[in-house]
Length: 78
Image: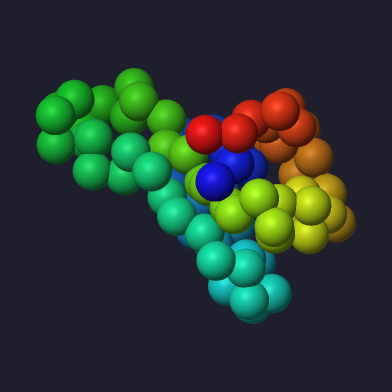
């Protein structure tokens, strides 16, 4: 899996999840439960991960949504 976006913004995560789901792109939000350990301070960013086969399409959708500045570098393989 490759990291598409890393953010603390729950609204952005929700928006990106809806874009990916609508396009049929399987994804996973990593570190979503870390708020329990960190005390809900949002210090640990959540990561949206996408399969290597679908990362190019996912990156294109993020760019089309005007959120290119949120993308992780293209070598973000996990």
